Length: 70
Image (cartoon, rainbow, N blue to C red; front, side, top):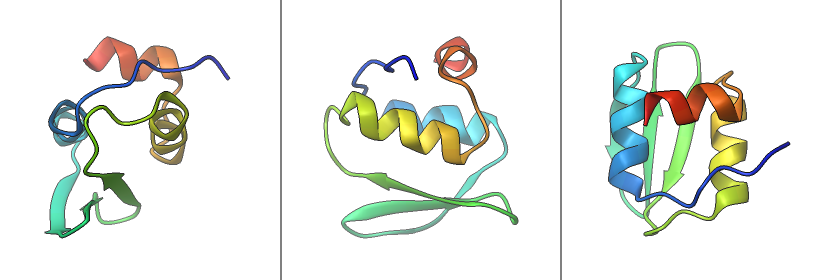
């Protein structure tokens, strides 16, 4: 899997909000859901590229699709 760039957690949240996810709760991680899937986004700046790739994969996106929404 090609790596995604390490991005700020706010940018990751913005991308997933565009895709229909909403913030369910926040603490050490941000939990986002679309009613069917749940994503955990760490509060790191930047989020590690491999971690971000895994989160995008959990959301059903390829790295290219995720980059297109940035």
